[in-house]
Image 1 (cartoon, one colour):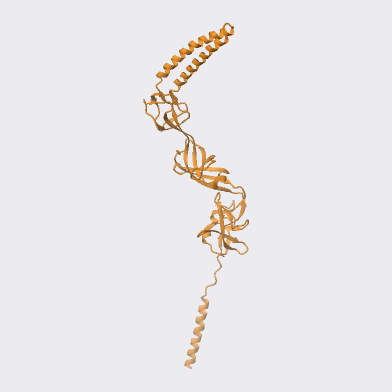
Image 2 (spheres, helix red, strand yellow):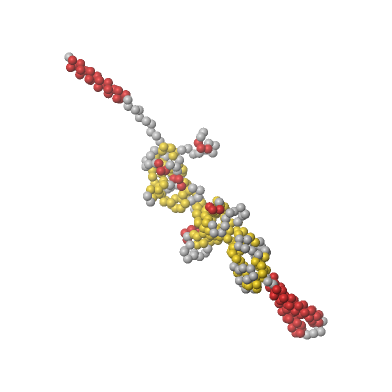
Length: 357
């Protein structure tokens, strides 16, 4: 009897324990669906960008010299001085040229008197024409000599042909210089240029330049508009083509020739081009991918693509792998996996910035 009771108690205990175990089971949790930002692929006319590295260069660097020679009497500038158009930079001792002009002037005035008298006589037909022609020839020769002496006297002063900065001095004061000897070099900084090099494959794109902007880090310049000035018709020895951009050197710009610069060029594409946001792109080893959102299954699938070239405003142009109208994920692409179920975020409203309402 005791044994039966013990067996009965053990059976009841086992049933009770089983009931307690089953009652402690957790209820199944609801599936979490990740929300993602998507965009629809479209083939619009897009702008392509290029970024070129270059150097700032002055508009012109010109060496100035006298047309005449002699002892240098005054050198009125030093390196770094700013000179204005017509300002006297240097002077040659004009003593000999002053004597020359006085001599040639006296000769000219004497011959001029004879010329005027013979001119009246020939008009009155009192002397033959050939006699007057000899007087006229002598008159023209002395007149030319006098004018040349005047020009040489004026040329003893070296004047700035344009406003700019003295870059270098080649002579010192009181030194005897010859005609054509470089005295100083002057920089025209009214406009500056950015000189860069491009490859043959970039030639057609650069000629489609629509907007270009200058960036000079050391001068604090960002997105300063510049104009395409020229593209060389022949490649240099390194196989690259020289391209120049021009911009006005305003007083508030702290830029100087020789500085390193970048030019961002926005070129209009010649045809419509598939493009996606650059944030949709991710790489694995040597391949490039995007996540395609399948609206019928609500899941994502990885798709390999080929990039044509970088576009403008955070876009990337696509060569192959995508079709017009497909949807791609544009945020959090590194945290997804193949076949993951997702839900697209609603498009932002202009009246509900940030989706707070």
